[in-house]
Image (cartoon, rainbow, N blue to C red; front, side):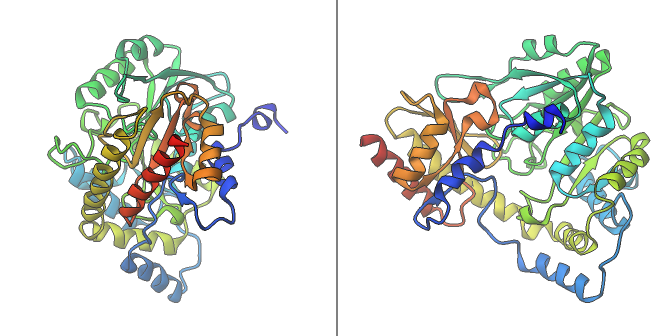
Length: 390
């Protein structure tokens, strides 16, 4: 086995979750998904597809009907292009993570330099390393109130003509940090000068609460880019459509790459299942029945949890502008992996350790607030408060 594969770290989130296996009394906020079931009409579309016998291969790039639906959806969010042009920018993938991997495979050779903004979901760091790239990280910086910000000068200094790819996730998992449109324009202009590709993980684009954009979504690189810029944007049905287990996503990429990416999809997964694509098509056609209510509920969850956490002595936490996580630090508890395990065993509280997302977050904990029952969030905080009191 290749050394780089042997050296990959196992998920520290699952390591914590294993502490709670078989325990029904644990309040589980460790994984990045809502506990709400996918809406009935989306599930029914998949069932209807199966009942019609749609159990065969599809086009590598996705069903034309789904690609057109995605094109219309993206045009609604980012209307700088005509809808018809969007179709040629779309490749359907078997989940957002598959889309990210396909994008990295398309762009990165062994030995290439890849720059990442961290802390970040660990798969984003692992993927270029698996391909033999040299990964450099530029950490966000946390202030005393628990808010994270980008050191733009440090990022631009890290991106040189020798940098093949910049990977950035905003809204960010785990911190909730988001880029401004001005920051995106600055980064894009710099990467144009250096010839660097940008891979933007924007799967949390719709989970945005600041209300300072015309479409209600987080700022996107697509709003400042030209069609043939060296930019690939990753999206997923997981978060905004309550479809984590369906494993379906898409890439927005320059049309000059679309055919080649289709070949890579063939070598990775061949295609996404037809019945899942049918469900996703219906989800997009009826987006307004799912996403706005979900975002409103998540904002209620956020606005319930964060003040309660901030009221716990020793806790530093900021209100995230996007995503579905509260990221916080507890004074005197800098070893977050053993802390998270103890919280499971001794308090029945399941959180993700910050060290899963990078060394700069090793003293932090991530709390997924996507809970159907808002009361569970308050109960979790009381368990934390009681445990800290001893």
